Each structure stands twice: as C-alpha cells, then as structure tokens.
Length: 503
Image 1 (spheres, rainbow, N blue to C red):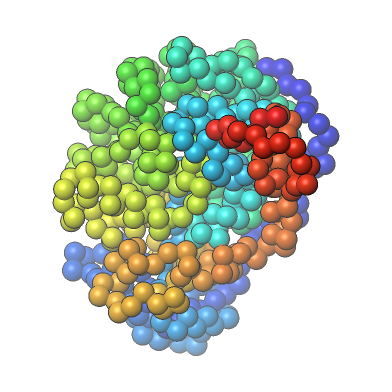
Image 2 (image 1 turned 30 degrees about the vertical axis):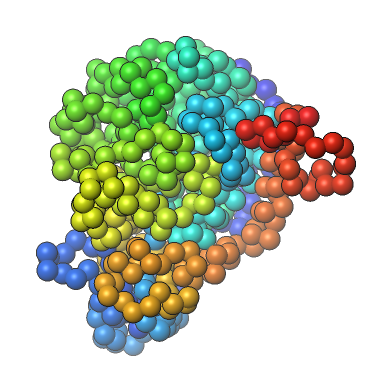
C-alpha cells in the first residue's frame, strides 16, 4: 500500500491536555435515574445521593442522604435529574465540520461529497476534526462512543457498479491523529479501524491494521480506551475475501466488528447478498454488530438472532438520508440485541441524544400504530446500558452502579421549566433536551458545563476546525457561503451545489 504526504504535519503525537484526573465527589439531593437492571416493580428512579471515589468509579448510591460523611467535593444539584452519560454505539467523529453537507442527498451521493473533502486533508486536519467532534459529543451528554475512524485510504464508491475506486492514500499518522482527538477531549471510545484490504497486498494490509490496533492501545489513556474494533466494510467490497480477512483479524487481535449493512434502499439486493459473505466467513456472533440494518430479510433477522449478533440503530441519520425505517421493535421481539448511535455530525447535524431518542420512539409508534410499543424508559436504556451491552463495555459504562465509571449528566427539568413532573422518565426523555443539560461528568470529572467543554483546547478548536475545513473546500474549488476567508471577496452570486458553491 503506497502512501504519500499531503502537506506538512505540525505534530504526530497527542497534545498534553488529555487524560482524566478524577477526584472524590459526592452528589447530593439528586433525582437519580440509574438505568440499572431491577425488579419489575422498580420505579427506576429515586431521590438521593451518589459517591465517586478518587479512581473515578461509583462507590455507592441510594435514597435520602449519604449514610456517612461525604467524600471529597460535594455537588448539591438541588433536585435536578442525574442519569448516566449517553453511549453512542455508532459514530464518525471526524465529520464535525460537515454539518448541512449534501442536505438533499441519499447515502451514496452524501458519502461521495464527504470523501471529496477529506481527500486533501492532512493528519493534523483530522486531529482537529475529531477533537471538535468529541467535544461536541461531550457537550451534548455523550460520554462514550464507538468511533469509526476515517480510513487513511480515500475510497470513491460507485453504487451503479457496486465497486470502489481508489482515491488517495494518506500517511499512517492520518489514522493515529484521529485517535488523539477523543482522548484530548476526554471522551471514552471504542476505536474502529477499516482493513482496506482491496488497497494493496494482503500481507502489507494486515501489517498496517496490526499497527493501528497497537497504536490505539499505546496512544489512548487506559481510562478512555474501551477497546478496538473492525470497521466492517463488506457493504462496499468487491468479493467475499474481505469478510474472510475481517474474520481473521478479529480472531488474531481478539476484537469486535461493526459493519454497515443494508443501510439504504439503494442497491438493497446487492447489499443483502453480501450478508452471506459474512455468514460463510464465520464472522456472525456476539462480537459482531450490524450498523443500521434497515432493510434485512426475515431470514437475515433470524440468522442474526441465532448467532447472537447485535444491531445498532441510527434513527436520526436514517431519516436525514432517506434510508428508511429500521423496525427495531420487530427485531427486539425476535430476540435481537439493539443499541443506539448518533452516527455523525454530517448526517445528524446536531448530535443530540434527546432528539435521537424521540425521533426513534416516535417513528416506531407511527410504524406500528401503537403509542405504547416503545416507552421512554425503554429508549433511554437503549441509548445507555443497551448500547454499552452490545459494545461489550457494560462492565464499565452505561448505567449508574457501584464499581462502574462515574459518567453522568446533570439535567435540570426546571431550567427552563418543563412543568409538573407526571412521570420522571417521560419528563427526562420527552420534555428535556440540550437546553436542560447543565453539566457532564466523565469519571467524576467535569468535562462540559452549559454546553461548553472545560478543556483548555476548547478555546482553539472552533477556529481550527473552520479554518481547516474551509481550506479543504477551497482546494476542491468549493466556496463555502459564509467562509470568513472569502468574506469581502466580491464577485457575482453563484448557484449552490449540493455541498457548497463551485468556483
């Protein structure tokens, strides 16, 4: 696999602002929604306290006041709601600078518009893109994410022929700098790497992938590293060998796999046929997830259940791209494990987990003509503990339980007021939103307050993102309508293209 540089790299190692340094903390006077498994009669909430140790893990929680002297700092939330941080089980953090791109496009034209932009970006550009995306996630209450890194190989997919064209190969740092962004923001991630087996000799491809797995382990702080995974790419592959190689690296490295499959109605028969490639390769099982899974056959659903595979649901992006409606109610009734993802900022535009829960729940109710088919407590669990379970990280995140990481949100339903509380879970899911999200904690450490990251890098990230993405667009001959570098340049008005204005 041949690579070439695209410009000077200002850094190939992470800035020093990253790893979490938790301190002991006691949260008092909170309405706690632990999202933990309990008895059927368990209301799922109580007014009480939660303790956090110096290691960033929950040491205790319960109703009323703490049973002994509070440990460390006392956080009195005055009756606000405290719930686990959201888990996005399917994310592409590098897209944070592309909100609104191709706003009328379906999946493949939308992907092509993004790939055109990223063809000319450097490793350092990708660092700032992922840093911005991770800070945005944290500001919106997402504390853990499965992050698909943008491949160092830029592929240009042709849906008419169901084949890839090789666009560009970036240096290895293009991958590793994307690992640094979430770490410096303080976001926990599963790092997903694409094998890119069709880009070069198999031996070299496998060696490069192994280097990526090792880099994730070495570069990411242990408290933020939730594991490494394969970005399953058989949806775009030319033949079944891709599935076989993905099975090989899963076994060699002891890692999971999440594959985009039957995501869109475009070329759906071709996508469905590739399900068999995974099945025949022996990939299906508890370590395998289908991303999207919007258009499966009944046989595919049954086989996924039989093998213990899971699904990650992206209702917001599926709607934005016109991909269709995944019937997760049917999947769950069949016994399929389902988590939820925010996907990415370029096809959700606002990575809002409250919006994601509502869009998903309302779509299922409309599809089934039944307002009780998916309830607020169900969808909250899907976006927290269920997502952690399908990712295999529920021993650490996804709920507020003793021994787990103290990743939690402070959401005040009274500021602005949502009115009287008739049902705590309904108020949290249906009536609250980002405007009510006051504080975000990861491992007991404040990482975002009132929608803004507490990291010192937050002062630079917005300008870096705008400058770097704007430059990438200009290299393509695209002019962003409100690009500061173009303000005052004058000239005649131009007709808009799907993702900018072409000079």
